[in-house]
Length: 462
View 1 (spheres, rainbow, N blue to C red):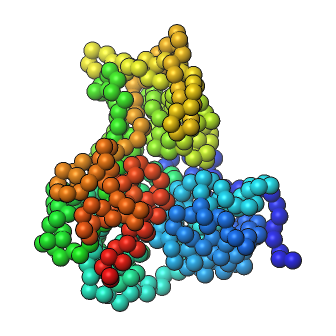
View 2 (view 1 turned 90 degrees about the horizontal axis):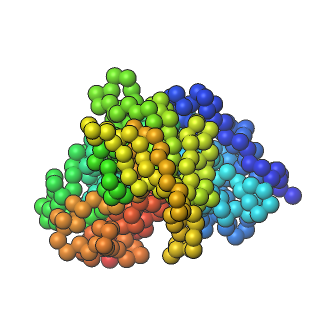
View 3 (view 1 turned 60 degrees about the vertical axis):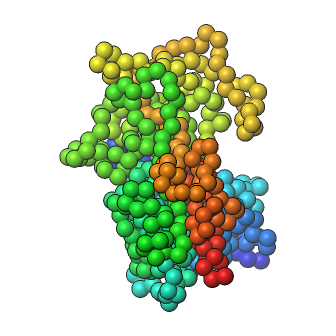
């Protein structure tokens, strides 16, 4: 019989102590050591039908790489992951495995699923620490592809195409590559050095990156194909346009979109004492929303010294954020007001935020998504003290692409319309990720990038 570890509980990931980490922006989760990784990998019973793989949007050969970890063959395990995943160090940290691969794990039927994400992170970090061999660069096929946007969808698409021999150039609007990975996800969840390493790996394969290039301003999609000689274009421009509640007081001083708040903290280091672009120093922050972005904003504000309350109109059971993020936020002292909906932002004569007028909610009948619809509770009004409000209500695609790309079909929310393979209404133009779906997860965007890369290859070789 194979030497499996039949322990029902997974091995704990060491983390910074909450009292320490809420005062710094260093990574919270510290990762497995070699011995722990081997023992956790031995919990995988190598199911014949590999159900975990059905939950992976990028098709990682999960049992194969975990089997190699169990044997102590860490570099070989990393190479298996890299066959289909261009960003393993990123996915191992921010992918919602509990809803994807781990949710399908057989060990989860009687106990806890194998810690697939933690093992993926371990392999990527082991490779970064121990190996620096030159990559194997594919022979060029003479065809040029432009990728617009350097977020997870764009990086994945570029990585798959450069390995097929394409001359790939990524055009990024910001001054650094990485998209939401650098501006949206805090350092304590995803260190920027990790993102930089993944980007540099792609550059070593031959991917070229042009920064400070805003699509629709520096160039149009048509110009890329007509004037620059690109035979196909992939649009991975994300969804960076913030949404608001349209309630009174949203124009007050001290009201931020989560996008702006996180960009200034993560990308511009506004939390540093000598920052050239400091952000408003608040004492009491209310974060509206319950997703991962809301948790990220709340945990950033907490590290900057504020008392923070997350305001969410449904109950705790409906919170869409990752369970780990919710737990970490609570450990760090973030407060939660469930079944609460803001009605007005209060302000003084100088338009500074002074509080949040709220109403208590209760859950009614299920809505179209199957979740019980929150409805106002009679007489349940109250005021929440706050001098800063952060709106974390989701985002939609930037309208510039639609406005400057003639013939590109988009949906009512500005999302680019594609078929199941990422083809748009324009010949040679493909799209994927949040620009198509609206705000979603990193791994789903990566899956869309892979799908589009395959379709682009078929388009250019038919």
